[in-house]
Amino acid sequence: MNPLLEAHGHTSNNRLELEASKLCGCCSCIQIFPPRDIVAWTGLDMSNFDNPDTASAETALCPRCGSEALIGDGSGYSINPDFLTRMNQAWFQKTRLIRRPETKA
Ligand SMILES: [Zn+2]
Image (cartoon, rainbow, N blue to C red; front, side, top):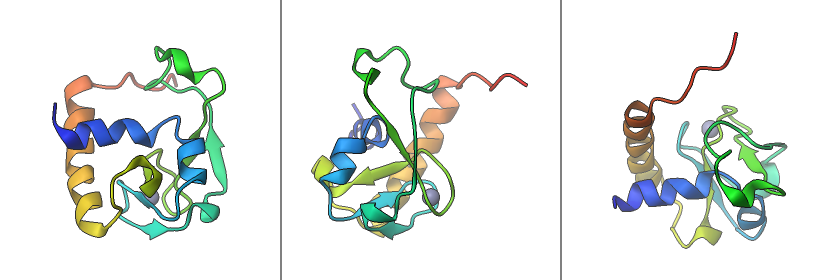
């Protein structure tokens, strides 16, 4: 498996992991900031609802761009612009591959 896609799993249901991180970054806007800057979290969404661990899980929303695309250094990955840029590419690749369902209008 592409390690970047594996790292991608850390961008959802990541509240505990982010709270244990010193730095986190956004794969969408490539910003890096401390997890205390995160102001919003979301619950279950399309990408995680078949995951049995989501009952109490929450996903961070990027305070800069609003994407559910944050990963913290608590994941074991080092957070830097190069990594985030590669994650960004993997992110869009994956989005195209799995074709996320459209939100109901
Ligand atoms: Zn962002």
